[in-house]
Length: 495
Image 1 (cartoon, rainbow, N blue to C red):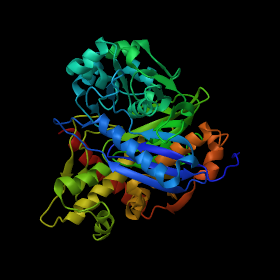
Image 2 (spheres, rainbow, N blue to C red):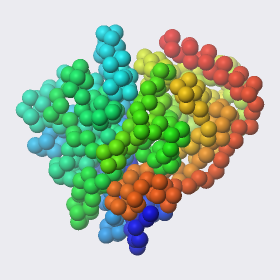
Image 3 (cartoon, rainbow, N blue to C red):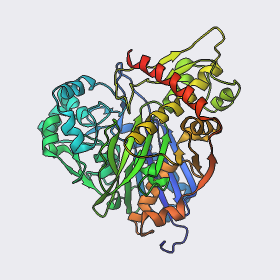
Image 4 (cartoon, rainbow, N blue to C red):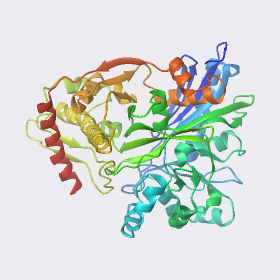
Protein backbone atom coordinates (compact mmCIF):
# COMPACT_ATOMS: atom_id res chain seq x y z
CA UNK A 1 0.00 0.00 0.00
CA UNK A 2 1.24 3.50 -0.81
CA UNK A 3 0.48 6.55 1.28
CA UNK A 4 -1.23 9.33 -0.70
CA UNK A 5 1.29 12.06 -1.48
CA UNK A 6 1.54 15.12 -3.67
CA UNK A 7 4.80 15.38 -5.58
CA UNK A 8 6.88 13.88 -2.79
CA UNK A 9 10.43 12.82 -3.62
CA UNK A 10 13.10 10.56 -2.14
CA UNK A 11 16.64 11.94 -2.37
CA UNK A 12 19.31 9.26 -2.66
CA UNK A 13 23.02 9.67 -2.09
CA UNK A 14 24.89 7.02 -4.09
CA UNK A 15 28.49 7.15 -2.87
CA UNK A 16 30.31 4.85 -5.27
CA UNK A 17 33.92 3.98 -5.93
CA UNK A 18 34.59 6.29 -8.87
CA UNK A 19 31.90 8.90 -8.28
CA UNK A 20 29.37 10.17 -5.79
CA UNK A 21 25.92 11.16 -6.97
CA UNK A 22 22.62 12.46 -5.68
CA UNK A 23 19.42 11.35 -7.41
CA UNK A 24 15.85 12.43 -6.70
CA UNK A 25 13.18 9.79 -7.35
CA UNK A 26 9.45 10.18 -7.37
CA UNK A 27 7.28 7.44 -5.89
CA UNK A 28 6.82 5.85 -9.31
CA UNK A 29 10.57 5.21 -9.53
CA UNK A 30 11.31 7.90 -12.10
CA UNK A 31 14.44 10.03 -11.85
CA UNK A 32 13.48 13.69 -11.45
CA UNK A 33 16.94 15.24 -11.08
CA UNK A 34 20.53 14.18 -10.45
CA UNK A 35 24.02 15.50 -9.90
CA UNK A 36 27.38 13.76 -9.77
CA UNK A 37 31.05 14.32 -9.10
CA UNK A 38 34.05 12.03 -9.82
CA UNK A 39 36.01 10.71 -6.85
CA UNK A 40 39.79 10.89 -7.04
CA UNK A 41 41.51 7.51 -6.99
CA UNK A 42 44.84 7.32 -5.15
CA UNK A 43 47.33 4.47 -5.74
CA UNK A 44 50.22 5.08 -3.32
CA UNK A 45 51.79 1.63 -3.84
CA UNK A 46 51.25 -1.51 -5.89
CA UNK A 47 47.94 -3.06 -4.90
CA UNK A 48 46.97 -0.11 -2.68
CA UNK A 49 43.85 1.97 -3.37
CA UNK A 50 42.84 4.96 -1.25
CA UNK A 51 40.23 7.72 -1.20
CA UNK A 52 40.14 11.03 0.60
CA UNK A 53 37.14 10.69 2.93
CA UNK A 54 36.98 14.48 3.24
CA UNK A 55 36.58 14.73 -0.53
CA UNK A 56 33.83 12.08 -0.48
CA UNK A 57 31.92 14.12 2.11
CA UNK A 58 32.38 17.49 0.39
CA UNK A 59 31.38 16.23 -3.03
CA UNK A 60 28.46 14.23 -1.63
CA UNK A 61 27.22 17.29 0.26
CA UNK A 62 27.49 19.42 -2.87
CA UNK A 63 25.53 16.86 -4.93
CA UNK A 64 22.74 16.68 -2.34
CA UNK A 65 22.43 20.46 -2.19
CA UNK A 66 22.48 20.78 -5.98
CA UNK A 67 19.64 18.31 -6.46
CA UNK A 68 17.63 19.76 -3.57
CA UNK A 69 17.95 23.18 -5.20
CA UNK A 70 16.74 21.77 -8.52
CA UNK A 71 13.64 20.05 -7.17
CA UNK A 72 12.87 22.21 -4.14
CA UNK A 73 13.96 20.97 -0.74
CA UNK A 74 10.40 20.97 0.72
CA UNK A 75 9.44 18.17 -1.71
CA UNK A 76 12.04 15.81 -0.23
CA UNK A 77 10.34 13.50 2.24
CA UNK A 78 13.39 11.41 3.12
CA UNK A 79 17.00 10.59 2.24
CA UNK A 80 18.37 7.17 1.33
CA UNK A 81 22.05 6.25 1.19
CA UNK A 82 23.87 3.54 -0.71
CA UNK A 83 27.61 3.16 -0.89
CA UNK A 84 30.72 1.30 -1.94
CA UNK A 85 31.07 -1.43 0.66
CA UNK A 86 34.13 -2.62 2.64
CA UNK A 87 35.95 0.71 2.17
CA UNK A 88 36.99 1.84 5.63
CA UNK A 89 37.05 5.44 6.89
CA UNK A 90 38.94 6.66 9.99
CA UNK A 91 37.97 9.93 11.67
CA UNK A 92 38.39 12.00 14.81
CA UNK A 93 35.10 12.47 16.66
CA UNK A 94 36.38 15.68 18.27
CA UNK A 95 37.25 17.47 15.03
CA UNK A 96 34.94 15.65 12.62
CA UNK A 97 37.83 15.23 10.19
CA UNK A 98 39.51 12.11 8.75
CA UNK A 99 42.77 11.12 10.42
CA UNK A 100 43.97 8.97 7.51
CA UNK A 101 43.06 8.04 3.95
CA UNK A 102 40.11 5.73 3.44
CA UNK A 103 41.27 2.23 2.48
CA UNK A 104 39.18 1.17 -0.52
CA UNK A 105 37.57 -2.24 -0.97
CA UNK A 106 39.88 -2.98 -3.93
CA UNK A 107 42.98 -2.51 -1.76
CA UNK A 108 45.19 -5.60 -1.34
CA UNK A 109 47.69 -4.39 1.28
CA UNK A 110 46.50 -6.89 3.90
CA UNK A 111 46.90 -9.96 1.68
CA UNK A 112 49.80 -11.28 3.80
CA UNK A 113 47.85 -10.80 7.01
CA UNK A 114 44.89 -12.69 5.56
CA UNK A 115 47.19 -15.48 4.37
CA UNK A 116 48.71 -15.76 7.86
CA UNK A 117 45.27 -15.99 9.50
CA UNK A 118 44.27 -18.62 6.97
CA UNK A 119 47.47 -20.60 7.56
CA UNK A 120 46.78 -20.47 11.29
CA UNK A 121 43.46 -22.22 10.67
CA UNK A 122 41.07 -19.35 11.38
CA UNK A 123 39.12 -19.25 8.11
CA UNK A 124 36.58 -21.95 9.02
CA UNK A 125 35.57 -20.08 12.18
CA UNK A 126 35.46 -16.76 10.34
CA UNK A 127 33.29 -18.18 7.56
CA UNK A 128 30.94 -19.88 10.03
CA UNK A 129 30.36 -16.64 11.93
CA UNK A 130 30.40 -14.08 9.12
CA UNK A 131 29.67 -15.95 5.88
CA UNK A 132 32.85 -14.39 4.47
CA UNK A 133 36.34 -15.62 3.62
CA UNK A 134 39.72 -14.33 4.71
CA UNK A 135 40.51 -11.86 1.96
CA UNK A 136 41.87 -8.28 2.01
CA UNK A 137 38.66 -7.25 0.23
CA UNK A 138 36.87 -7.07 3.59
CA UNK A 139 37.21 -4.37 6.23
CA UNK A 140 38.50 -6.03 9.40
CA UNK A 141 42.14 -6.37 8.39
CA UNK A 142 42.07 -2.84 6.96
CA UNK A 143 41.26 -1.46 10.42
CA UNK A 144 44.04 -3.44 12.08
CA UNK A 145 46.54 -2.39 9.43
CA UNK A 146 45.69 1.27 9.95
CA UNK A 147 46.09 0.98 13.74
CA UNK A 148 49.47 -0.69 13.26
CA UNK A 149 50.85 1.52 10.51
CA UNK A 150 49.36 5.01 10.79
CA UNK A 151 50.41 6.79 14.01
CA UNK A 152 47.56 9.31 13.76
CA UNK A 153 45.03 6.48 13.77
CA UNK A 154 46.69 4.74 16.73
CA UNK A 155 46.93 8.01 18.68
CA UNK A 156 43.27 8.81 18.09
CA UNK A 157 42.30 5.34 19.32
CA UNK A 158 44.48 5.69 22.43
CA UNK A 159 42.90 9.07 23.22
CA UNK A 160 39.35 7.81 22.66
CA UNK A 161 38.87 10.08 19.65
CA UNK A 162 38.83 7.45 16.88
CA UNK A 163 35.69 6.38 15.07
CA UNK A 164 35.65 4.03 12.09
CA UNK A 165 33.01 2.94 9.65
CA UNK A 166 32.20 2.12 6.09
CA UNK A 167 31.30 5.00 3.80
CA UNK A 168 27.61 5.20 4.72
CA UNK A 169 28.59 5.37 8.40
CA UNK A 170 30.91 8.30 7.70
CA UNK A 171 28.33 10.14 5.61
CA UNK A 172 25.51 9.67 8.13
CA UNK A 173 27.82 10.91 10.89
CA UNK A 174 28.62 14.03 8.87
CA UNK A 175 25.02 14.58 7.75
CA UNK A 176 23.80 14.31 11.34
CA UNK A 177 26.55 16.65 12.61
CA UNK A 178 28.03 13.84 14.66
CA UNK A 179 24.76 12.77 16.30
CA UNK A 180 24.65 9.27 14.74
CA UNK A 181 27.53 6.79 14.51
CA UNK A 182 25.66 3.92 12.85
CA UNK A 183 26.09 1.28 10.16
CA UNK A 184 23.26 -0.60 8.53
CA UNK A 185 23.39 -4.40 8.74
CA UNK A 186 24.30 -4.93 5.08
CA UNK A 187 27.47 -2.86 5.39
CA UNK A 188 28.30 -4.23 8.84
CA UNK A 189 28.09 -7.74 7.40
CA UNK A 190 31.07 -6.95 5.12
CA UNK A 191 33.57 -6.18 7.88
CA UNK A 192 34.53 -9.71 9.07
CA UNK A 193 33.46 -8.50 12.52
CA UNK A 194 29.67 -9.06 12.55
CA UNK A 195 27.97 -12.32 13.48
CA UNK A 196 25.67 -13.09 10.56
CA UNK A 197 22.85 -14.60 12.60
CA UNK A 198 22.63 -12.10 15.47
CA UNK A 199 23.68 -9.01 13.45
CA UNK A 200 25.92 -7.92 16.33
CA UNK A 201 29.62 -7.23 16.63
CA UNK A 202 31.28 -10.47 17.69
CA UNK A 203 33.79 -10.28 20.55
CA UNK A 204 35.84 -13.24 19.30
CA UNK A 205 36.13 -11.76 15.82
CA UNK A 206 37.09 -8.34 17.17
CA UNK A 207 39.78 -10.04 19.25
CA UNK A 208 41.04 -12.09 16.29
CA UNK A 209 41.46 -9.02 14.10
CA UNK A 210 42.57 -6.74 16.91
CA UNK A 211 39.75 -4.23 16.46
CA UNK A 212 38.49 -2.38 19.57
CA UNK A 213 34.70 -2.63 19.65
CA UNK A 214 34.44 0.91 21.07
CA UNK A 215 35.43 2.46 17.73
CA UNK A 216 32.73 0.62 15.76
CA UNK A 217 29.31 2.06 14.88
CA UNK A 218 25.95 0.85 16.17
CA UNK A 219 24.35 -1.66 13.77
CA UNK A 220 20.90 -0.64 12.52
CA UNK A 221 18.11 -1.78 10.24
CA UNK A 222 18.18 -0.77 6.58
CA UNK A 223 14.95 1.23 6.84
CA UNK A 224 13.55 3.45 9.56
CA UNK A 225 14.54 6.72 11.14
CA UNK A 226 18.32 6.24 11.16
CA UNK A 227 19.23 9.90 11.67
CA UNK A 228 18.21 13.41 10.62
CA UNK A 229 20.09 16.13 8.80
CA UNK A 230 19.72 19.91 8.63
CA UNK A 231 21.79 20.09 5.44
CA UNK A 232 18.81 21.00 3.24
CA UNK A 233 17.54 23.80 5.46
CA UNK A 234 15.18 21.89 7.72
CA UNK A 235 15.33 18.56 9.51
CA UNK A 236 15.14 15.83 6.87
CA UNK A 237 15.03 12.20 8.01
CA UNK A 238 17.54 9.64 6.73
CA UNK A 239 15.34 6.55 6.48
CA UNK A 240 17.14 4.08 4.21
CA UNK A 241 20.66 2.67 3.97
CA UNK A 242 22.25 -0.34 2.30
CA UNK A 243 25.49 -1.32 0.63
CA UNK A 244 25.43 -0.85 -3.11
CA UNK A 245 24.99 -4.47 -4.11
CA UNK A 246 22.20 -5.15 -1.66
CA UNK A 247 20.51 -1.92 -2.73
CA UNK A 248 20.75 -2.99 -6.37
CA UNK A 249 19.19 -6.35 -5.53
CA UNK A 250 16.28 -4.54 -3.87
CA UNK A 251 16.00 -2.16 -6.81
CA UNK A 252 15.77 -5.21 -9.09
CA UNK A 253 12.92 -6.55 -6.92
CA UNK A 254 14.88 -9.69 -6.00
CA UNK A 255 12.70 -10.12 -2.94
CA UNK A 256 12.04 -13.89 -3.00
CA UNK A 257 14.44 -16.85 -2.59
CA UNK A 258 16.25 -17.78 -5.81
CA UNK A 259 15.83 -14.42 -7.55
CA UNK A 260 19.14 -13.29 -9.01
CA UNK A 261 20.79 -10.02 -10.04
CA UNK A 262 24.21 -8.92 -11.23
CA UNK A 263 25.49 -5.35 -11.11
CA UNK A 264 28.19 -4.31 -13.57
CA UNK A 265 29.99 -1.28 -12.24
CA UNK A 266 33.64 -0.98 -11.22
CA UNK A 267 33.38 -4.64 -10.29
CA UNK A 268 30.59 -7.16 -10.84
CA UNK A 269 28.54 -8.47 -7.96
CA UNK A 270 25.98 -11.23 -8.25
CA UNK A 271 23.43 -11.74 -5.47
CA UNK A 272 20.93 -14.58 -5.14
CA UNK A 273 18.22 -14.00 -2.57
CA UNK A 274 18.32 -16.82 0.00
CA UNK A 275 15.46 -16.08 2.40
CA UNK A 276 15.40 -15.95 6.21
CA UNK A 277 18.16 -18.49 6.98
CA UNK A 278 21.87 -17.76 6.41
CA UNK A 279 23.06 -19.87 3.45
CA UNK A 280 26.33 -21.79 3.75
CA UNK A 281 28.39 -21.98 0.59
CA UNK A 282 30.78 -24.85 0.01
CA UNK A 283 31.97 -23.43 -3.31
CA UNK A 284 33.71 -20.22 -2.24
CA UNK A 285 30.72 -17.89 -2.45
CA UNK A 286 29.79 -15.46 0.31
CA UNK A 287 26.83 -15.43 2.67
CA UNK A 288 25.68 -11.92 3.41
CA UNK A 289 22.79 -9.82 4.66
CA UNK A 290 20.30 -8.89 1.92
CA UNK A 291 18.54 -6.42 4.25
CA UNK A 292 17.33 -6.10 7.81
CA UNK A 293 13.87 -4.66 8.52
CA UNK A 294 12.21 -4.41 11.95
CA UNK A 295 15.15 -6.29 13.41
CA UNK A 296 14.67 -9.31 11.11
CA UNK A 297 17.44 -10.09 8.58
CA UNK A 298 17.08 -11.60 5.13
CA UNK A 299 20.07 -13.25 3.49
CA UNK A 300 21.76 -13.70 0.13
CA UNK A 301 24.52 -15.69 -1.55
CA UNK A 302 27.02 -13.45 -3.30
CA UNK A 303 29.76 -13.78 -5.84
CA UNK A 304 32.16 -10.86 -6.13
CA UNK A 305 34.19 -10.05 -9.26
CA UNK A 306 36.72 -7.33 -8.56
CA UNK A 307 37.19 -6.00 -12.11
CA UNK A 308 34.35 -5.30 -14.54
CA UNK A 309 33.89 -1.69 -15.63
CA UNK A 310 37.37 -1.03 -14.25
CA UNK A 311 38.71 -3.11 -17.14
CA UNK A 312 37.05 -0.79 -19.66
CA UNK A 313 38.41 2.17 -17.72
CA UNK A 314 41.88 0.60 -18.04
CA UNK A 315 41.44 0.29 -21.81
CA UNK A 316 40.66 4.01 -21.85
CA UNK A 317 43.05 5.44 -19.28
CA UNK A 318 45.80 2.80 -19.13
CA UNK A 319 46.16 1.64 -22.72
CA UNK A 320 44.52 4.61 -24.42
CA UNK A 321 42.90 2.43 -27.10
CA UNK A 322 39.43 3.92 -26.59
CA UNK A 323 38.39 7.46 -25.85
CA UNK A 324 35.19 6.54 -23.99
CA UNK A 325 33.37 3.44 -22.76
CA UNK A 326 30.57 4.21 -25.23
CA UNK A 327 32.90 3.13 -28.06
CA UNK A 328 33.08 -0.46 -26.85
CA UNK A 329 29.72 -1.61 -28.24
CA UNK A 330 30.46 -0.59 -31.83
CA UNK A 331 34.02 -1.94 -31.63
CA UNK A 332 32.83 -5.33 -30.32
CA UNK A 333 30.26 -5.52 -33.12
CA UNK A 334 32.83 -4.61 -35.76
CA UNK A 335 34.57 -8.00 -35.60
CA UNK A 336 32.97 -11.47 -35.85
CA UNK A 337 34.82 -12.74 -32.78
CA UNK A 338 37.76 -11.87 -30.54
CA UNK A 339 40.28 -13.20 -33.04
CA UNK A 340 41.51 -15.77 -30.54
CA UNK A 341 42.19 -13.14 -27.85
CA UNK A 342 41.18 -13.90 -24.27
CA UNK A 343 41.47 -11.34 -21.48
CA UNK A 344 41.36 -12.35 -17.81
CA UNK A 345 40.93 -8.93 -16.14
CA UNK A 346 42.50 -9.77 -12.79
CA UNK A 347 43.73 -6.20 -12.36
CA UNK A 348 43.04 -6.31 -8.61
CA UNK A 349 43.40 -10.04 -8.02
CA UNK A 350 40.58 -12.52 -8.54
CA UNK A 351 37.46 -12.73 -6.41
CA UNK A 352 34.87 -15.47 -6.31
CA UNK A 353 35.11 -18.35 -6.71
CA UNK A 354 38.92 -18.27 -6.92
CA UNK A 355 39.88 -15.77 -4.17
CA UNK A 356 43.43 -15.25 -5.34
CA UNK A 357 44.56 -11.72 -4.34
CA UNK A 358 47.94 -12.18 -6.04
CA UNK A 359 46.53 -13.15 -9.45
CA UNK A 360 47.23 -10.63 -12.18
CA UNK A 361 45.56 -9.79 -15.46
CA UNK A 362 46.34 -11.92 -18.49
CA UNK A 363 45.90 -11.13 -22.19
CA UNK A 364 46.47 -14.19 -24.40
CA UNK A 365 46.09 -15.18 -28.03
CA UNK A 366 47.65 -12.06 -29.51
CA UNK A 367 48.86 -12.15 -33.11
CA UNK A 368 49.96 -9.73 -35.79
CA UNK A 369 46.33 -9.48 -36.83
CA UNK A 370 45.06 -8.45 -33.40
CA UNK A 371 43.34 -5.07 -33.43
CA UNK A 372 41.96 -2.87 -30.69
CA UNK A 373 38.50 -4.16 -31.63
CA UNK A 374 39.58 -7.70 -30.73
CA UNK A 375 40.95 -6.58 -27.36
CA UNK A 376 37.80 -4.58 -26.60
CA UNK A 377 35.60 -7.54 -27.53
CA UNK A 378 37.69 -9.89 -25.39
CA UNK A 379 37.31 -7.45 -22.48
CA UNK A 380 33.53 -7.45 -22.81
CA UNK A 381 33.43 -11.22 -23.27
CA UNK A 382 35.29 -11.57 -19.97
CA UNK A 383 32.25 -10.12 -18.20
CA UNK A 384 30.10 -13.01 -19.38
CA UNK A 385 32.72 -15.63 -18.60
CA UNK A 386 33.39 -14.29 -15.11
CA UNK A 387 29.64 -14.26 -14.45
CA UNK A 388 29.37 -17.83 -15.74
CA UNK A 389 31.99 -18.85 -13.16
CA UNK A 390 29.73 -17.46 -10.45
CA UNK A 391 26.59 -19.09 -11.83
CA UNK A 392 28.43 -22.43 -11.94
CA UNK A 393 29.38 -22.02 -8.28
CA UNK A 394 25.81 -21.07 -7.39
CA UNK A 395 24.53 -24.21 -9.11
CA UNK A 396 27.01 -26.30 -7.12
CA UNK A 397 25.59 -24.68 -3.97
CA UNK A 398 22.08 -25.65 -5.04
CA UNK A 399 20.87 -22.41 -6.65
CA UNK A 400 19.86 -22.83 -10.29
CA UNK A 401 19.89 -19.60 -12.27
CA UNK A 402 16.70 -18.71 -14.07
CA UNK A 403 16.47 -15.22 -15.45
CA UNK A 404 19.37 -12.93 -14.55
CA UNK A 405 18.45 -9.32 -13.81
CA UNK A 406 21.29 -6.95 -14.66
CA UNK A 407 22.07 -3.34 -13.90
CA UNK A 408 24.92 -0.87 -13.62
CA UNK A 409 26.46 1.46 -16.13
CA UNK A 410 27.89 -1.30 -18.34
CA UNK A 411 24.50 -2.81 -19.21
CA UNK A 412 23.50 0.20 -21.30
CA UNK A 413 25.59 -1.75 -23.87
CA UNK A 414 23.17 -4.00 -25.80
CA UNK A 415 26.00 -6.12 -27.18
CA UNK A 416 27.23 -6.88 -23.66
CA UNK A 417 23.74 -7.89 -22.48
CA UNK A 418 23.35 -10.26 -25.42
CA UNK A 419 26.78 -11.76 -24.77
CA UNK A 420 25.83 -12.31 -21.13
CA UNK A 421 22.77 -14.27 -22.27
CA UNK A 422 24.93 -16.27 -24.69
CA UNK A 423 27.61 -16.95 -22.08
CA UNK A 424 25.16 -18.08 -19.39
CA UNK A 425 22.51 -19.77 -21.48
CA UNK A 426 19.72 -17.92 -19.65
CA UNK A 427 17.56 -14.89 -20.33
CA UNK A 428 18.95 -11.56 -19.18
CA UNK A 429 16.52 -8.83 -18.12
CA UNK A 430 17.51 -5.18 -18.05
CA UNK A 431 15.35 -2.81 -15.99
CA UNK A 432 13.83 0.39 -17.30
CA UNK A 433 15.95 2.27 -14.73
CA UNK A 434 19.50 0.96 -14.79
CA UNK A 435 20.26 3.08 -11.72
CA UNK A 436 18.89 0.26 -9.60
CA UNK A 437 21.45 0.74 -6.83
CA UNK A 438 20.06 4.20 -6.14
CA UNK A 439 16.52 2.99 -6.78
CA UNK A 440 16.90 0.28 -4.12
CA UNK A 441 18.05 2.88 -1.61
CA UNK A 442 15.04 5.01 -2.58
CA UNK A 443 12.72 2.05 -1.99
CA UNK A 444 14.23 1.43 1.45
CA UNK A 445 13.96 5.11 2.35
CA UNK A 446 10.34 5.21 1.17
CA UNK A 447 9.51 2.20 3.36
CA UNK A 448 11.44 3.71 6.25
CA UNK A 449 9.51 6.96 5.87
CA UNK A 450 6.19 5.13 5.90
CA UNK A 451 5.37 5.92 2.26
CA UNK A 452 5.04 2.20 1.49
CA UNK A 453 4.24 -0.53 3.98
CA UNK A 454 6.67 -3.10 2.49
CA UNK A 455 9.44 -3.56 -0.05
CA UNK A 456 7.00 -5.59 -2.14
CA UNK A 457 4.67 -2.58 -2.35
CA UNK A 458 7.59 -0.26 -3.11
CA UNK A 459 8.82 -2.58 -5.87
CA UNK A 460 5.35 -2.77 -7.44
CA UNK A 461 5.24 1.02 -7.64
CA UNK A 462 8.86 1.90 -8.42
CA UNK A 463 10.59 -1.00 -10.24
CA UNK A 464 10.02 -2.39 -13.74
CA UNK A 465 11.70 -4.23 -16.65
CA UNK A 466 12.78 -2.67 -19.94
CA UNK A 467 14.16 -5.39 -22.24
CA UNK A 468 14.97 -9.09 -22.22
CA UNK A 469 17.90 -10.73 -24.04
CA UNK A 470 17.72 -14.46 -24.85
CA UNK A 471 20.59 -16.82 -25.76
CA UNK A 472 21.44 -16.83 -29.46
CA UNK A 473 24.15 -19.56 -29.49
CA UNK A 474 23.94 -23.27 -28.83
CA UNK A 475 25.30 -25.35 -25.98
CA UNK A 476 28.32 -26.61 -27.97
CA UNK A 477 29.50 -23.11 -28.84
CA UNK A 478 28.95 -22.00 -25.26
CA UNK A 479 30.95 -24.95 -23.91
CA UNK A 480 33.82 -24.27 -26.33
CA UNK A 481 34.07 -20.69 -25.09
CA UNK A 482 34.05 -21.91 -21.48
CA UNK A 483 36.95 -24.28 -22.22
CA UNK A 484 39.09 -21.49 -23.66
CA UNK A 485 38.26 -19.24 -20.73
CA UNK A 486 39.07 -21.92 -18.12
CA UNK A 487 42.51 -22.45 -19.68
CA UNK A 488 43.25 -18.72 -19.51
CA UNK A 489 42.11 -18.51 -15.88
CA UNK A 490 44.43 -21.36 -14.93
CA UNK A 491 47.30 -19.40 -16.47
CA UNK A 492 46.32 -16.21 -14.62
CA UNK A 493 46.21 -18.04 -11.30
CA UNK A 494 49.80 -19.19 -11.83
CA UNK A 495 51.14 -15.66 -12.37
